[in-house]
Amino acid sequence: MRMQTRVLGRTGREVGVVGLGCWQLGGDWGVVADDTALSVLEAAVDAGVTFLDTADVYGDGRSERAIGAFLAGRPDAAARVTVATKMGRRADPHEPGAYTYDAFCRWTDRSRENLRTDTLDLVQLHCPPTSVFHTDEVFDALDRLVEDGRTAAYGVSVETVDEALAAIARPHVASVQIILNVFRRKPLEQVLPAAAEAGVGIIARVPLASGLLSGKYDAHTQFASDDHRAYNRHGEAFDVGETFSGVPYDVGVAAAQDVAALTPSGMTTAQLALKWIVQQPGVSVVIPGARTPAQAQANAATDRFPDLDDATLTSLEQVYDDQVREHVHTRW
Image 1: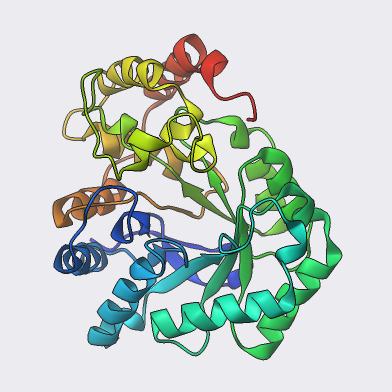
Image 2: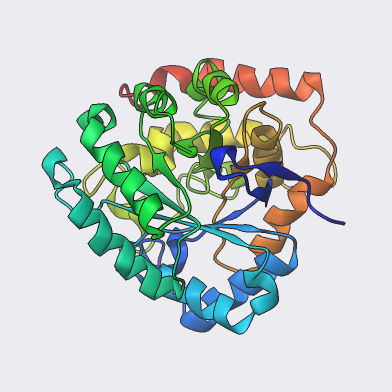
């Protein structure tokens, strides 16, 4: 069965509604061997995935290089797959002045080499300082990247609703990537309607709350020392929202058990969580990660299931209201 597609905002590209997030192919999720990374990419694309999301800092380019090698060996896939990468984390994350045209050229040149392409499909600012979203010179420089042919389009990855709304107001921003899941519902209120009205694509990231919404973890689960779910629970290394969606682990585990109890027959809890996102008006594509080919195939299969019914949607909202809402990190 062919996966349903949606237009990714101002890129004009049709992408399958379930993509593949490729952070784990670079690092920070424990070890994923090179041959496993290629197997995950192959399984995802063969299951209908046509959108891959990566970044220049994932494994210091390792994720990009894996994608580049895979697509070089699969010209059939390269013809139908959209690859989005991100740039900006090579700069001091607290220095807005680092986001210049010259820096953008250096970063995109490196990504183009890693991905083995002359023109990037989509490059996104990687959660820059908030002031960057209000700096005209930054977006002028991004426009120049398009004019130069370094990238076909550009978007932004954001941490907050206010950043998303500022980006959506920019006339040439093609897409906004934002955390959205059953435990992070704030974007539903303003961001998704504003994006839909402006014709901006929405890329939903951290859809499973770093695995919490798979329903497989409990209070005793241990994560490897090189896994951000062990070392970034309180924002020690980067924004805490990237780890368990900014929800305290014990709160998330308990709430995820109640989410699991709502899973319809034949679905996994992860598929339930992904289906909830796909159903939200304005979402272009959701990008769950996968560490094994089986996970990639199961994620892609989400599109085969019918929409969740009203009773399930209401119950999921009740879990959020009763158990999660007051505990989500205050920045959101």
